[in-house]
Amino acid sequence: MSQRTLVLLKPDAVRRGLVGEIIGRIERKAGWSIAAMELRTLDRATLEQHYAEHEGRPFYEPLMEFMASGPSVVMVVEGERVIEGIRALAGPTDPIAAAPGSVRGDFGTIVRENLIHASDSEESAEREMKIFFPAFS
Ligand code: IDP
Ligand code: MG
Image (tube, rainbow, N blue to C red):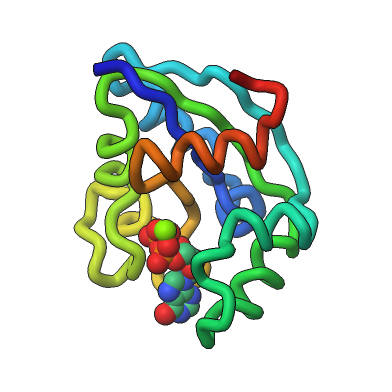
């Protein structure tokens, strides 16, 4: 089942020079491909839409500040079961709990700066792709 998903390589990944490493892992999965990609500094309005579900949580404001702190790589990735697949490749939210071999498990230590975002369901993917690539159908 081919799918599309929204992936963000967060500002920590860009600052630390891990873009090639992470994109390489995505590209090496058989049949997955990059359908859209841009280096972009995310503004408050975009981030408010993207993280609407977390508004009011204690980590929300620091998360917004971090996510606007420098450019991110914004991508649409497509391929077989890519929604579930990139979530697995990323690992769970807390990088210390994430298994080595996952992006977060290999490179992260603190929860906020966990390198990568990937849509968590088909509904989220549709919603998030519209936020970041409104012209992309
Ligand atoms: P996810 O990115 O694994 O889907 P979410 O729970 O949707 O995780 O949270 C969105 C983002 O907010 C996380 O990727 C992380 O950057 C940040 N975050 C989530 N929970 C915490 C927390 O408890 N402390 C600090 N930052 C958090
Ligand atoms: Mg999430």
